Amino acid sequence: MAKQKTKRGAAKRLKVKKSGVIMRSRAGRRHILSSKSRKRKRRLRKPAKVSKSDLKRTKPLI
Image (cartoon, rainbow, N blue to C red; front, side, top):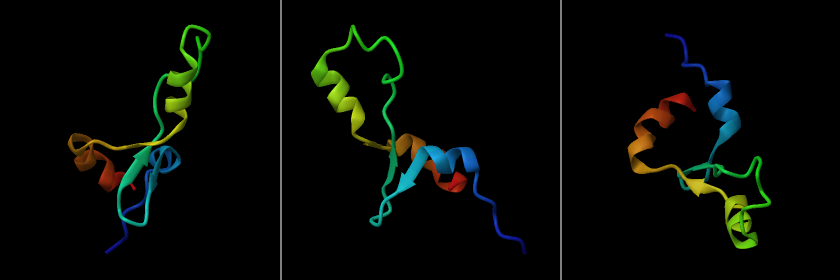
């Protein structure tokens, strides 16, 4: 039986840590940055964990 292919779009957006946690980048860092505070922009740099409700959809993609 053939192996399941990785969805390349998901592979570029999601990273799996050694512990198995799937990390994603945060939304809201593309444009209109002048109206956002420095603190908020700094927080948006850091990756976030994929929520439990989205894990069911994201795991098969990677």
